[in-house]
Amino acid sequence: MLPNCCSSIVSDDYFMRQISGIADLLSHLVFGKQNGKEDVFHQIPMAAEDRTLITTLRFLLNIGQINEAENLLFETLEHRLSAGLPEVVDTFYRWLSELDDQALIRGGFSREEITQGHGDAVALLGKNRGRQSAHAHGLLPDEEEKAKEK
Image (cartoon, rainbow, N blue to C red):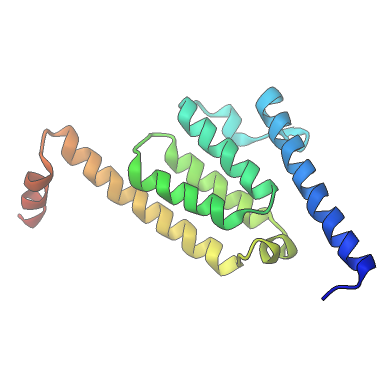
């Protein structure tokens, strides 16, 4: 248990991170900027739902909710196909890799998880592209399985 003086500092730190996260989100939404500089993803043409996703991911990272952000990313990858998702994945994991070790520890995350998560997300994107290609050729899901077997 922390002494009263340290407890107050930890609590203040938490609230400052929350306020900073909200300020960064508002800055991004209003000006398309992150920490005073324009982010790369803002310069790339992207569907509105992908921009919403990446903004939400950024917000979650800013308030230290790393696992929740990664879970949201994977839920999206599993249920939606979009040309902008590879850029979202790369940007998200770049942001994670730029966090300092203390921020990762507070978020219950490690550098190894960044590498593994990025690899898993890229693999899932590849799997989804294969499904999208089969559907584009007019194959039904059971026909798609038969086509894979051949």
